[in-house]
Length: 170
Image 1: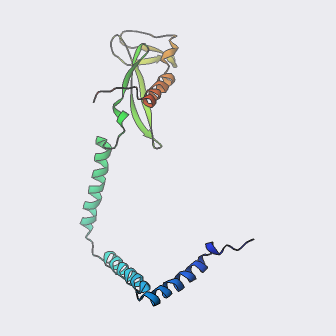
Image 2: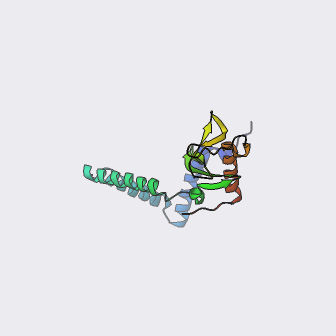
Image 3: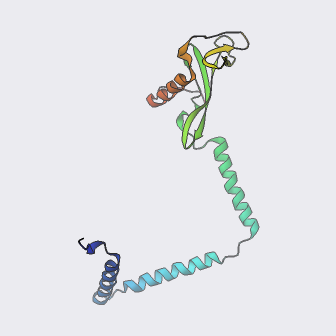
């Protein structure tokens, strides 16, 4: 195996020190002294910071401000994406509504449900079939209408986001 002197950390350190000393000698500028003074200055300020007397109530106020700020950001959605208010749309015959939930760092459609076109009541599945929906109030039904399957509607929502083919009311 060929010895790679350019990647040897010991050799680089030795030549770095020799080169710095030679630069100091020939130019009269003490670089190592400046580096040592800088590190000494940082160490002194670090020790001052670490030995500073902190009152417990200062920490409690700081923790309260941080937690309060996080709550406000979560509650009022300062950092929500532009599509966050896109929560309803009409697909085929039915009006669909949903909310967004961040799961594993990705925004996903959550609580997807259809609304009755006659009375605007939430439709429920018939006998655990996701594509057959019925209205509890007026008995409207979309039996055998496979266009309105929730998985397909969810895919259409994501497709609208990709194409930026959506509108919403704020």
